[in-house]
Image (cartoon, one colour):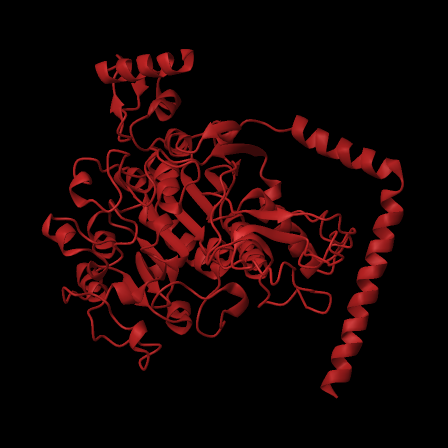
Length: 540
């Protein structure tokens, strides 16, 4: 019967994993194994040649909340899902030759959110918590401070240079990360006009959904967020009986229909399910809007493959549409629900999102050439996830440490510094000896009680390959990323790189403090002032 077949297959996998581990142990006990491996790696580094070409394309992969602990744990999970020990697994991200770190703090907080960080790495300017696409002179939720403080992104710089541009996300397309590429908002939560105070609307601020259509002519838009695009009373096509999934807009605008009308006569398509999405031919499509959920997409572990495509599939479709442009493209791909799973204190969901994200990166590399495509993989911030307890080699990354606490109770290898997993009852931790911590529903223990796990403030990894990828080495401020991308692709204000490829450079180009850039051979008075203030601060 089915159960006996399942148990037999389970035994097969167990013995196969055991055999693999025994073989690996035998190899690793020989010091020549490690010497040969290191020698091979050293030679590959010595053979590395700098690619100083102008980047025709930019692939920007952003793992929201994918701190280094998440990255390491996802690597192990990826290997264990392939019946390996896991620790020695090589993720696609691991193959990127250039590695750096980015400092993620915002102007006003040690630990930032996804809006402030998106403004940094996309617009090249650090800003305040909860604000997006504006500089730090703007204040959270105060509309009047937004005007005149807008900053533009690498996506807009690329579009202005004639490239095709796109966003792919597993969250709503109005969420902080994608919004950082096109919107300017004193509040990251102004998804629709229904989310805005009347005072902000009265002062002339507009919601993020309406800015999605207005600010930049984006060629490919893929994610969720249907309900912020349609009027109140509009039933959702997938969940017509669920009132909470229906349209939210108070102004009566149907932004999906408006987008379709704007693209009338062009090769443009809208899709809300996988059947429609799969029927779209990228070779005959110039514009695509695909919104698969009223809000955020489903977690990869819970996704219905008959209704929603994977991040691998959406990434591929976007690239195939955008790469038809002979001038190249810019594509932002966000795995946004790594962060949301961490906020729930659910390491299982977070790590499976990260593994899927690595698969999307692999597909992106397959579809492009390292010769002309600069590919970046990074995170916006981290989470207080710890990897602890001396687990044995090959032990499940979602399992329990063999080293118990002084209270004679076990704990999991992965835990959180704070969050919903705080379960102290009568001064004691719960006994999880008989709890399956590998299940999708399990919430890891946390040290401090919070309804939602916070972010954490350590630096995040920046991985790069392709033209000018060496610019992303070292420890840098997070806002440096946008400027390095613009320089490598010759978009935005600093065009020295492409000028050097045509004629010897004459003069210099300086980046203006507002992030939009200002060309010229002489420093502006304000740049001299800023430099003086910086020098004074360092001397202090």
